[in-house]
Image (cartoon, rainbow, N blue to C red; front, side, top):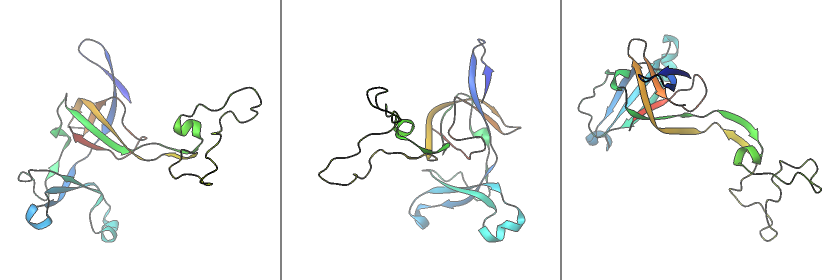
Length: 186
């Protein structure tokens, strides 16, 4: 993250996102596929890996759209499609936090700090009752946290640098540094 200043001198926290050209690999039509969409490829693969994958791109993503008349195979989608002030939705894989207890994972308050609670302040306590004699499915318990797909809506585009292919988004985006993000217009 970084910061920029607006015309009034106020600080705006921004996340700088390095973008690249997204190439249209396939255009799906209603007649042939039953729906309309475009398939986009991102990040070119080295020549030695193209035979294994069958496509010259590391990442493929399909976007449904109503009007596909302006798209054709081989076209490039550049960051210049976004304008300063646009609101976008950013999706990506959030940070993984490993195996966590119930207090950090679910926000449990823990047990009392006194009156016979020794070494158990952050435990979850009782997890069931005697009638089913088992743990009910979906019970909030300790386990792996994070590492799931997260979407952040209504992020404002502060600046678009077409030459360096960088987009400055107001606020934080999901994931760690280097995470692949999907940016959609709202």
